[in-house]
Length: 151
Image 1 (cartoon, rainbow, N blue to C red):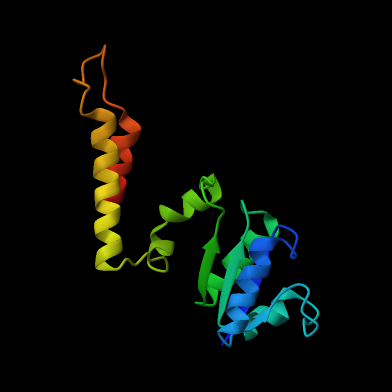
Image 2: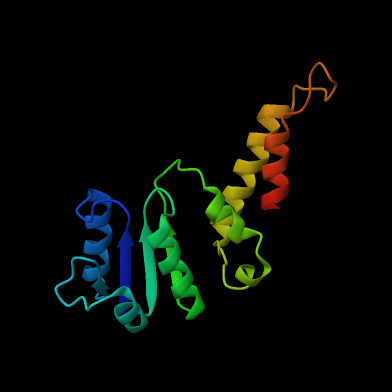
């Protein structure tokens, strides 16, 4: 399998190194900007890859292009954001796109889904259980909204 790996951080950042190392160890051919076999442009290399992995904090112009190019070719795309990073508006707009919704899926094992269910409901309950919903003591809507969004 060939994977195009793109990071908008320095290619030698530790998380990128670890990702590339694990992929290569699993027998995956990884194509990066620093690959010796990289051809003239992403347009010539990306079609040869079966999937794309993006690692970075946010979408820049190049990562947006690569993401769109990959999805247009029906390639799998994995986006790895740092722990605690908020999804920026560019990514959020993809979630509401009907055309993209068909291409984007998140799959959980039974155990992962149960853990998510507990975390979301417990977080909402811990935040809002002692609130009565009145004007003086309103429910925290952001926790209700995330619960509604996920389930």
